[in-house]
Length: 115
Image (cartoon, rainbow, N blue to C red; front, side, top):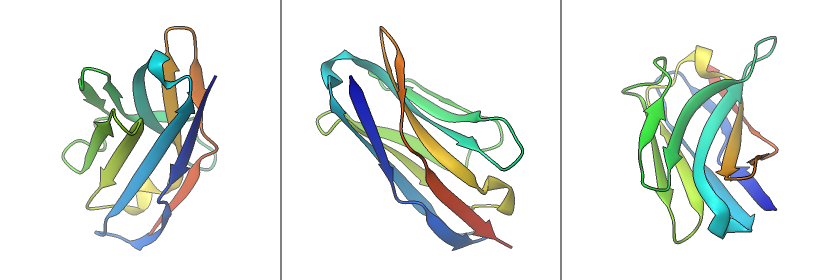
């Protein structure tokens, strides 16, 4: 079992920045990748960014150049630095931790970007 816990959400004006953190606990030696997804009201959950244990990354086109995902393997923590935020970035952001067996989701953290 792995338990991801997100933090760092909040309210920010358009053009501002936020940094999300996700700390994983439990059977962390099985983790092969960590990532961020988001779900806006009335929409499906979508990939934002993922990072593997080897630090390979993948981003949604909508956030490329604005968001950066990073990982501290020693702390089993993944970060999402979000710059130049837009109102359309408003969503609940979820951390996903992946092992060879399955994926684990955090509870989510709200990010609201005002215009």
